[in-house]
Length: 156
Image (cartoon, rainbow, N blue to C red; front, side, top):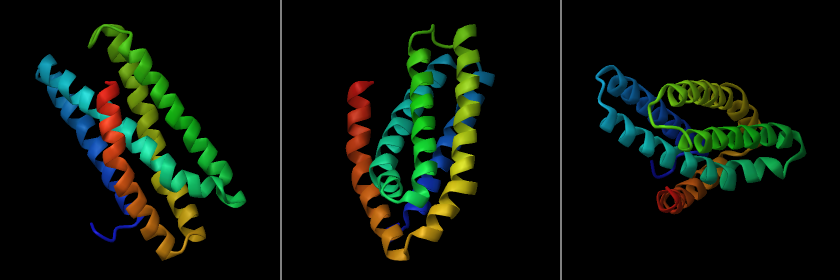
């Protein structure tokens, strides 16, 4: 993925997050709480790092452009909403009834968020960005994500 555009990289992460949700559902069905907790911790770190790197690359560029600013602001607010859910989940007994209910809400909101990005925001932003800008942002995202993963793991 050496020359992948920002949209390719973000979609790849979204697909990985969807796979983590599927694995968590399998662990839940198997009543494997230890595996579920590890997968959830992995999801938290991944999604936190993804959001930060996305904001530092694509969203920063979109915020600087009047015609894209509103969509970027909307997505940043959704990132904050997901972060709030993760904080609320941390305060609940893992996999207890209240936790499962809050997790289901967070999952629904997150899946809505990434679907909205992929179907609406990315195509709109792509019309405004050149192929060179998309590639440059993809490289910036690829550079920022490992540092953000490190930071998210340290905070976890």
